[in-house]
Image 1 (cartoon, rainbow, N blue to C red):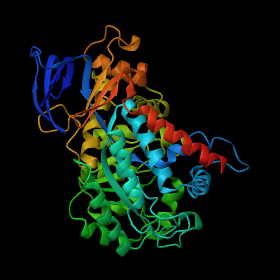
Image 2 (image 1 turned 180 degrees about the vertical axis):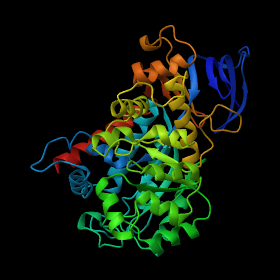
Image 3 (image 1 turned 120 degrees about the vertical axis):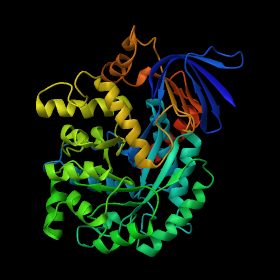
Image 4 (image 1 turned 90 degrees about the vertical axis):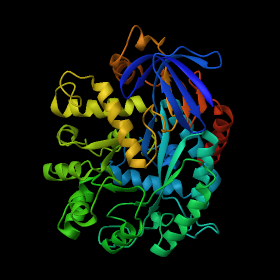
Length: 453
């Protein structure tokens, strides 16, 4: 048992002073506000808030960050970016995937993400052949999570086609492909690797209606009776048009009408919805997995959040392409997108409330639901995922209560996060990951090899 004493903390009952938290292994055993620090407790200066689960990551894409920012002869879009991504990933070995993922997870922890949903689709060798262990690359994701200390929901991706209705896959997609029998073997092998990572979760991830046909979708959902289900949906207008041409319905509409979506589901992006789809998704209890920085970087569009939230919709935040890893910036970009679209301020909080507090609370609760992890709150029985914000940072000077979150998200950024506990382990101290240097050195060596090849 470890005892941590914080001068201030955000609990589910609000802000409290002098909070004593007992940690037993991965989980919080007890929380006592207004408590004096026992002699054996570690006194931690700063403001404690719950860690946040990032609902959507393609960790290997961190290796591409900043390398696709050159205008081509045609209008650049998600689709032109994707072709560059296909060429880049053709070089990556399992060792490379592990090195890049470990560094991405270090950055996530330093930014305040204490768990990650890894939407993992880089399964095969560059020529499309299966490794002897079908979960070879999934094992590298698990190893990266172990090295960094981040909580993991592993979401192996099922990917079989190159377009809606079962269109043939493209050459650049050979590393992703599987059939249903191969996918079940992949899941079982992944489960064996996850057994070495306490507190981890296994889910399924039909990639999208472009990559999975109707028969396969039904087979996946019928067999996966418990655990998270994640899918890309309505990220691009071209995807919506393709889905309508194939099925007569838009992607979110098709999923709601055919798949019995419920609280286990997380629809990633869901950017392009009609008001009717938005209302139906909110009523389903599913989580919208929003990735505002990536959606801005790729030119996807802006999720129309206010009506979705007003209808009771839930969202989580993900880093997706990992072009920039920052919890505060993801939340800021989400709110600023609404302001730019509507030309008004403070769009995502109820009247009279703190916008920062509201989006933070939504992200932490939605993230926990989407990943099926017992995280997102400083209460007994939950994972001991704790961020300590530096109350001596200029952006937080003389702040208290919800103004702390407003100032961190809208004025402070990553440098505000000073200490991070993930699953009870201190993984960030003084703003830096405790194993930063060896993980960074391995990442740097990997990048030299990849970019000099």
